[in-house]
Amino acid sequence: MGLTYQRPFSVPFYESDRFKNMKISNILAFALQVSGEQSVELNRSDVWLNDHYKLFWAVTEYELEINRLPRFMEDITIETEATSYNKFFCYRDFRFIAENGELLLTIHASWVLMGLESRKVERVHDDIVAPYAADKSSKIQRSHKFKKELLNPEVTSYPVRFSDLDMNGHVNNAKYYDWAADMIDYDFRASHQPKKVYIKYNHEVRYGETVEALFEMDMDGLTSHHKLNGNATEIEIEWTKNNDE
Amino acid sequence: MGLTYQRPFSVPFYESDRFKNMKISNILAFALQVSGEQSVELNRSDVWLNDHYKLFWAVTEYELEINRLPRFMEDITIETEATSYNKFFCYRDFRFIAENGELLLTIHASWVLMGLESRKVERVHDDIVAPYAADKSSKIQRSHKFKKELLNPEVTSYPVRFSDLDMNGHVNNAKYYDWAADMIDYDFRASHQPKKVYIKYNHEVRYGETVEALFEMDMDGLTSHHKLNGNATEIEIEWTKNNDE
Image (cartoon, rainbow over all chains, first blue to last red; front, side, top):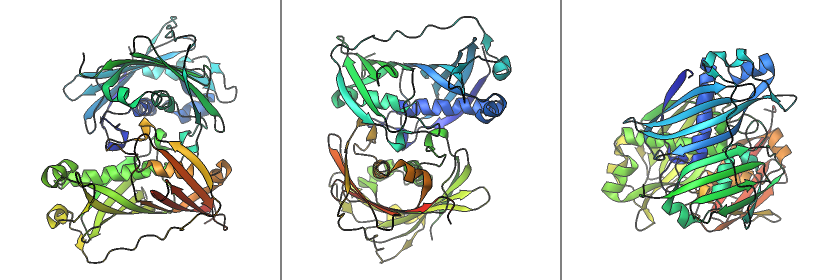
């Protein structure tokens, strides 16, 4: 296993949702921030990666296991660790931990290195990842199997707005969860929590596009399937009723 | 003048816009966070205010004077100070300061105390505000005069989404700036910075509503006028060309 990096965090008002839970989109955004901090500490910052290899990191997949969402004003610790890597993928975990040591949630993230000019996935060089002390492995982890086709989905359009963009010039990764979950009925959101979240990014979306979002709830009434712009981003959320362990 | 409260901050990736500037909506959200921290420190937290008076704070107006926006990863200090108050209004300033002491921007904010049950503006009790050591004054500061009517505005609709809400159950204050500025042409955003921003909140907006947003650029081509849901929120932005002091 790799080196761990930790930092404390207190959930602010503006990252809390209607029901005082930390927003999933902010959980993802902050996790990215924390891994960036570890990279700076290990002298492998985005600037370094750009200057030395003309590469940048991109997340291809997230898997969240949520025991309980962090609450407004709760003091938590976020821990991250690059767990392993192979020719093309690097795997990193994030753990959100309560003050009493309780594990609130885990994020498993898969990353690739993209060429700044080629805009294609490039090979992982040992020199880039060595400082994280992750295990080298020939094993490529299997992706989550998303539902191939939604049979009778609800459809919404989201025009991409300036405020949706990050400095890479495309829609910020964290935005897609909001677009997906915003299609779900308010009363359902009030009475349910996400327990597992799978997100797969296949293509970026840029300013000027309008995202067509499809959503369908499973027959079980507890699994929502989402497709944004065809298969550009696929999301699956397993929900659990509040106070129903 | 009142007691000041300071805290350091580093601008994260996900609060930076397409052009690596800290997003105005995040500037406003974070300022609110910092004043909340001061209130906790002075034993006048939102919880205290609720328990003792069944009141809560609401911002009615912002005025931003921007010399330069904080940049991605920039280390800054945010300072806040309750400057004065009268029968109904409390005034508070925020200063965003660069590492070299340069004043990046100032926010002047007007606040009222609202009754949790009455949903009306209530009188300011000395007991609530005394710890901040702001000046008591009979003078009610004049509001900015917004353009009364937009003659030939562009119109857009924003359905209120779950992710737009905060834990008060209405659209988060910071959201309106994004809705307003998102109507402005991308190339204009790329070549201009906001220099002054005036925001006035007259009515809250709730889930299920669709916000009708009006926008018109002044004849000078450098002042944008925005009205959201009639006069629910009024915004005026003075822009300046990049590298054009």
